[in-house]
Image (cartoon, rainbow, N blue to C red; front, side, top):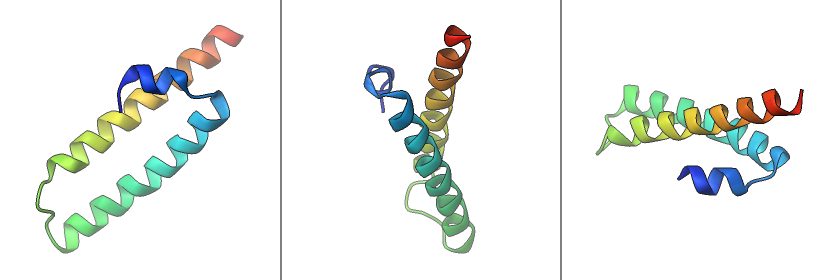
Amino acid sequence: MKIAEIKELSTKELQERIDAETVALEQKKINHSISPLDSPAVITKARKDLARMKTEMRQRVLTNQ
């Protein structure tokens, strides 16, 4: 997910997306530990996307204070 797409989301949608992506990332990690994924880069991409979303959420919190 690109930063431009993240900025288009509302704050509520962004928070819901962060929660969903966090759960999905944990599930990918568990699945990878049991049976290796075809491409472990999927985990790295998910982690970076989650970090981008959290960064945008933090910027919104700081600008609204």
